[in-house]
Length: 282
Image 1 (cartoon, rainbow, N blue to C red):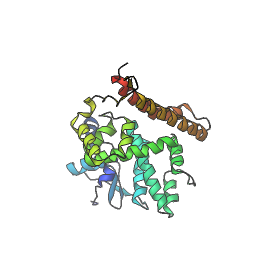
Image 2 (spheres, one colour):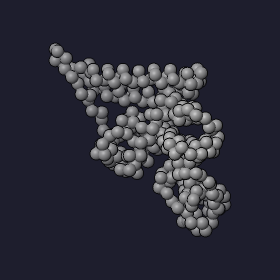
Image 3 (cartoon, rainbow, N blue to C red):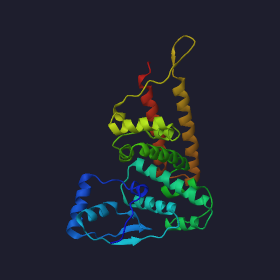
Image 4 (cartoon, rainbow, N blue to C red):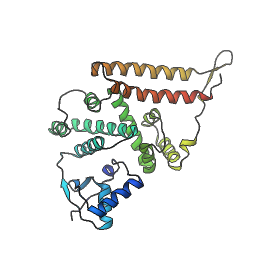
């Protein structure tokens, strides 16, 4: 039997199956055997972690197929594209994948070798010069602004995963709802803040905690001011306007799906602002 290497970075890219789905897969393999080959790259398992686990546990034989990639980043992009094309992913998982795809593609371009063109052909996306964000925005049918925000979100999720793999899983599966704007901000947070958020998510206190009142200033008459929230709203509105104009230019008017996707991240930000205003006195 082929020796298989379990690589945690690749394994963590694959969404975990719930207990019922895993049980059904196990029953099917026990009854019919492992019908689909496991996908390997240099001995590293890229696709088929659940099937591999079941087959090893029950001593069931399985076949493998080898993929050829020029780098680890190319293999990572293949895994991402494979998952996006065949699974019903949460919006958080899609954002995470898009951010990781961007980072891998940028690293490939930075190597300045022939692999860049090969990588794009593997994904059935014609290679051409230009912005990585623009190319991926076209592939995923989102705005370039969304891709760039996804990079920060992916970095934050992976930082949280470094502190607590379980917290990362809960974010990606939607078990714990974390505002995307909050995650984007955490991409540049201190290790202490990352660890604190990860601990709250892991032990279940994050979803129960209430929003802290915003820091309020006093005007000349001693009346509470919500100017910090007004400034935050202005930034959100300006960011939306800039990205919306960009989306219309890139999509030549765009369709409903593209516009709805562009709106989603800004709606999340507005909802976060709305919640923070809940404790402000009228």
